[in-house]
Amino acid sequence: MSYYLTTPIYYVNSTPHIGHAYTTIAADILVRHQRQRGVDTFFLTGVDEHASKVARVAAEQGLEPKEYADRIAIVWRELPARLGVSNDFFLRTTDDGHKVFVQDFLQRIRDNGRDDIYQDVYSGLYCVGCEAFKTEAELADGRCPDHGVEPEWIEEKNWFFRLSAYQKPLLDLYKARPDFVLPGFRYNEARSFIEGGLQDFSISRSGQPWGIPIPWDPDQVAYVWADALVNYLSALTYARPGEDLRDRYWPSVRHLLAKDILRFHCVYWPAMLLAAGYEVPQQLFVHGYLLLDDKKISKSLGNVLEPLDLVDVYGPDPVRFWCARAVSFGQDGSASVASLHERYERELGNDLGNLVSRTTAMIARYRDGSLRAVPAADSELKAVLDPLAADVAARLDVFDITGALERVWEVVRFLNRHVEVSAPWQLAKDESRADELDRVLYDLADGIRVVAVALAAYIPPTADRILAALGQPDDVGWENVAYGRTVEVTGIEAAAPLFPRLEAPTAAV
Image (tube, rainbow, N blue to C red; front, top):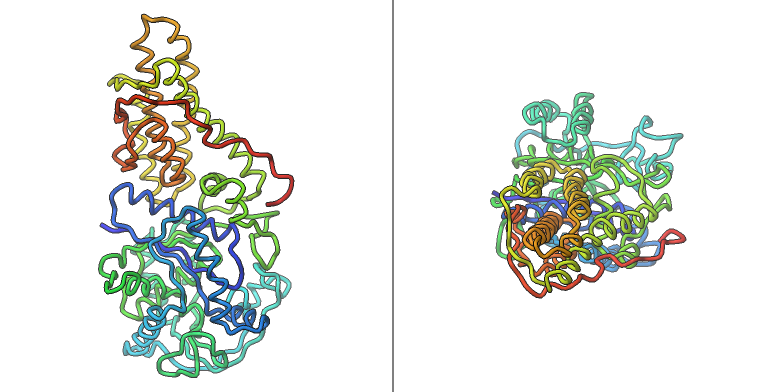
């Protein structure tokens, strides 16, 4: 069994914003969880460097496109590490391995005997921000709704992919696999687009030297989407030198993407794969936008939140937690620094942080730092913890990152109530209730340990700190999301605050 997860490769025309971090963090949570379950995983992210706007910005700065891309790609390469993301490979579309594979991929389509690639003249409106052609119906007052600019008129002789020939194969695919695209309303959106009739699209550009040359016509370069989408396959051929990972991870691949690129991933990409003789992905999950003032976060709109600035203030774990917690994953939702700060204080600081501090302090004070292993078959906590592993796993298997986190937080809230109801400070006053006190402290410690393991995919360093504070092994295997696995230990001290108080921001970070 394998689990191959990808994020879109991001344009290097600008620096990352929180919308980019959002997808990357979500992917890392899913991958880390699968690793906890012992699944063979591969996690891919990277950057797309062959967009028209990259060449334009480079020219404005007096640079060659590759020189400009080399400079700005550094920030993108640093982003996963700064966010605590554990990707296996970072792809650049200027990698030699990618370029060779793209040329082979396009040649396979041309040579498939079905005349799927042909030459024609294209005339139409093109949004450089989207790197996509637009119809009049897709514009708002003549402008791209995502970028707020008027598209350009382009007319040139290009090579086309006969997408129209794949309407029936795609409809058959969608009928046979109703979970091919998630959530369900995105599946319906993609299927409706296919049912409405598919238009052939250009896979090349003329008059632009920046890109991967078309193998049978080197005077033209691959259209950015005919290049970028192929990365999901190309990476497997050279990510690990001397190995071809396609048999190991393809097609058990899940693509994670935002709704603005649904058409390319859910329609164009599977059609191209079928034309090239490859199996289609196992699943695609399409999530919504993080919004500011009901608008998509976008550099071109000027309403960005800088993820690295947020990490500098709060640390990676609170940013990861907020991304997973603040908006139901898959839907559009509002984001603000104020909401991050509020969750940092209320949920991370009070709900979780104080729970760990209080419990370890009571063990240190009432039992000189010693925790007896006294699990009880009739423990109320056992009934709370026993369903947790299956419930969280089931949610994450369908990309419900927010719902899975809420399920863990139900346990966090239960443990906080349990502290108040059981009142260990009262039990400590009565020597005859020593065994009862040991059981209460054990259950609290065991519940916190389970929470730490369940949260390890969301806030990895914090989970490690919690386990260390309880003197427990740093084993976050999913089998440890179970009651009664906390081991007897001595030397527990009152834990330092996991999330120290911070001043509320007075302006956008």
